[in-house]
Length: 131
Ligand code: HEC
Image (cartoon, rainbow, N blue to C red; front, top):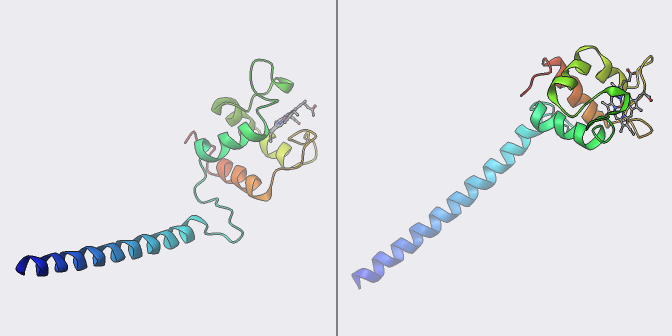
């Protein structure tokens, strides 16, 4: 008899804990989402890094021509040092934003999205770090 009551209390405690944890997780998830996308439109420029934002973008849009042993125009976008040079002398911004005096990039392909352009600008404004 005593055992049954204790088991019941245990079950109730376990159930309550489960509900509480589920509630906590759900709450945190929603908070995080708001933190992750501070700007309207869902473009996250708050956490731009070379490794997580810029290198994957170059791999997707640029390295097919500017990578490997014989890159177009002798320019490589597939490593930090070469890209930092292009960022520092204005060619990265000039080409992707289709500024006059620069060859528009990616060549013969649609301009990068506003969000990707914003990420490149943020990365350069923050010092084009190898982060
Ligand atoms: C389809 C191949 C191709 C792709 C993709 C491409 N490029 Fe180019 N890029 C070229 C060629 C070819 C040139 C030489 C100039 C020309 O022909 O317009 C060039 C030149 C450049 C230059 C020098 C241009 C100047 O005016 O000084 C930069 C900087 C550059 N590309 C950056 C990029 C970046 C950044 C990307 C990705 C967003 C990219 N390229 C994607 C082919 C490409």
